[in-house]
Image (cartoon, rainbow, N blue to C red; front, side):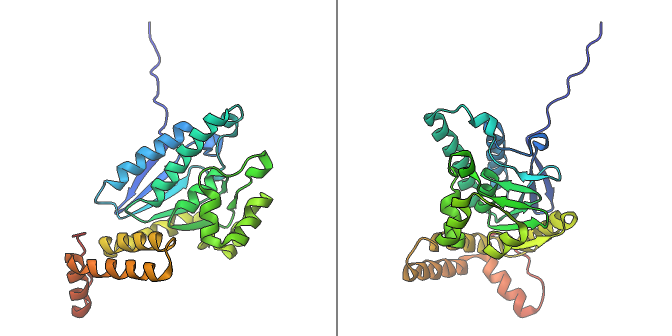
Length: 267
């Protein structure tokens, strides 16, 4: 009597390191990478893994398949939630978005298709958003009788301003890549076949900079957004001064004077 071998289920989040750049691919293509509890948990685990990897200096988040980055949260899973269950789900998704925003490495979203609802919210949590020319982005939750729950309203208004954010959130409209670029939600638009290559190229350029300086710049940008200007400038000055206690500062400036490439060590 023989038994067929059982193939393990594919990982929900794939990791592919391209030198110092980790590419994380959300891998539920049959469901357009819709976010459910399992996918959020898998993404959280991968982010923790990458955050602690000193060899990784930039991260890319993208979606499997040609149709979607993340089409949104899994509506079928949400349909019968109680208010308490919905609160727990919102907190879980919001925590993953916060984890992306607080990664020590810069995080680039490579939006290869639909980035709606929770998918758009994950992209908004990234430091830089690159989009395929075929990408569609939006927060259409009001068309379902709910509102964004993973931080989308708050991040969007901080990125594009409250009036533009109202245009997105209150209408529930879906925007093409060029419109998202015009609003400032997206920073670059590329042909679909070039998107991931362009994202990796950008990630490698960032990875080639001083990693302590990049992390400090990311931190100051985040802190300063919520501070009065005088306090934000003082925060920047202290972070600038702290760089001068690092070997990377000495190497970077010595390399500039010697007209050679810098060899940063992250110390």
